Image 1 (cartoon, one colour):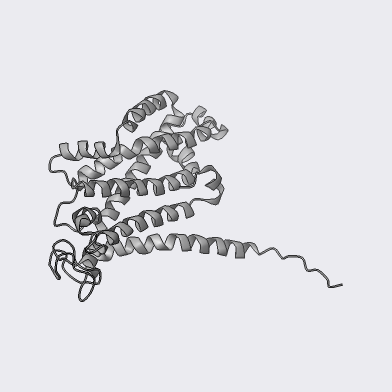
Image 2 (cartoon, helix red, strand yellow; image 1 turned 180 degrees about the horizontal axis):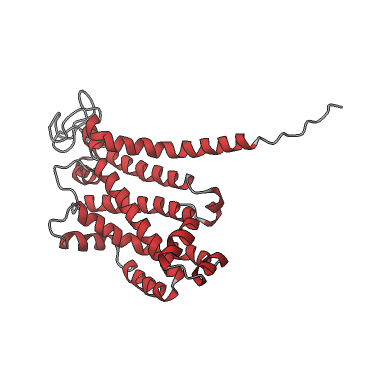
Length: 286
C-alpha cells in the first residue's frame, strides 16, 4: 500500500503572510484611485477649460475620450475632476465617524443622554437626503463646498450614531467599564480609554460606509449644481452637463460615472479589509 501523508498545516508565519497579502490586494486599488484623483490635475494633458475638438467629438486625435458639450477634452476633465470629490468625501467620512463615535459611546454610558440623542437622530433621519442638501446649501451664504460638507455631516451622523451606540452598549455594560466608572473615572476617560478602543472594527466599517454615502451625497450636490459650478471640472457636474449628448459621445458621461463608482467601491472594500479579524463577525458586511 502507498503510505498516506498527512496534510501539513501551514506555519503561522505563512498564514499571516497570506492574510497580509489579501489585505494589501484589497487596499491597493483604493490607494491607487485616490492617488490618481489627487494627482489628476497635474496629469491632465490639456487645460480643463480649453476646447480641443468639436462639441461631443468622438474619441481620437488629441482627445482619447473625445470632447464634451463645449469641445473640451473629456480625459483631462475626468483626471482633474476627482480631487475635490475625494477630499470632500474623506472629510465628511472622518467628521461623521468621529462625531458618531463620541455621541454613540456617551449614549451607551449615559442612558439619559442616549435617549435624547436617539430622539434627535430619529427626527433627522426623517429628512430625505436630497431635500436636506437643498435646504442647507440654498440657505447657506454663497453655498459652495462648506455647505455641502455641513449638509453631508448633518445627514450622515444620525445613522452612524445609531450603529455606534448599538455596538457600544455591551462594552459599556462590561465589568471593566463598570469598575472604572465606580472607581471615579470621568466620562471622557471612559469614552476614550475604555469604550472606543474596543470598537475599532465597528468604526473602520462605519468609515467605509460613510465614505460611500459621502460620495453619493457630494455627487448628488454636484449633479444638482448646488456645489461646484461650471466651468469647474467635477465628475457629477460632468454627468449633468453632458447627459444631453450621451448618444454622440457616451464617454463624456460614462467616464465620470465609472470613476465615481470605482472610487466608492474600492474605498469600501479597503475599509472592510482593514477591519480586525476578531471583529468581523460583529460587523455587517458593507
